[in-house]
Amino acid sequence: MINGSLARRYSQALFEIASETSLDPVDNDLRELTKLVEENEEVKGALLHPHISSSDKKSIMDKLLGEDFGQTTRRFLHLLIDRKRESLLPFIQREFTRLADEARNVVEAKVASAIALSAPQLDNLKQAIGRMTGKDVRIVSEVRAELIGGVLVQVGDRVMDGTVAHALNRMREDLLKTSEKPQEVGVK
Image 1 (cartoon, rainbow, N blue to C red):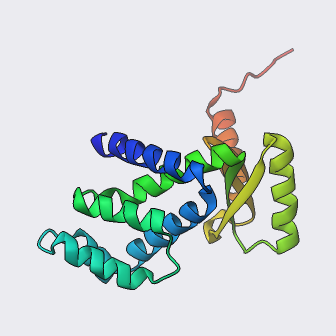
Image 2 (cartoon, helix red, strand yellow):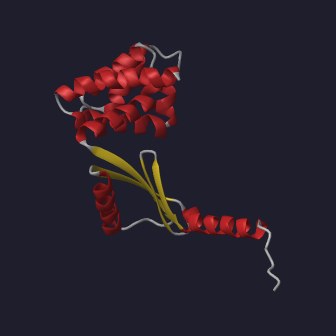
């Protein structure tokens, strides 16, 4: 709970600063940074290690991020390191992206399917979700073989399940319900 409220405060402050110039570079930098930390155990270990000094952490991260990384996001990362809040980075990134998407009138749609969808299929889905929400759509797709077929779409807290697995589960539940009801036998 405390991490969530702290992450919201930090992301709100960064959002206000980034809004003065451009949200996209900061959003992209935060995504790249979070991905680097979450996918590389050595980087994560160095960033979160309690016995590595703040100056050493900043130096390590600056070398890893290189010249192309924006100054706003770099200074923000340094602030997190100085305040020992680097563990909040994934939470801050998600909240910042949510705020930036809201400001840009963008909605993220998570799409899961049994096989990878083609570019035209993703484009059609993007257009349909755009018509439904009235917003620009960013699709994040994943392949989940257990879905058997069809598509599972999540936009915010709304889920549209058009998968074969879901249809089979519903059918199974319906069959169980009908088999549990006592059958009335009519005698005439």
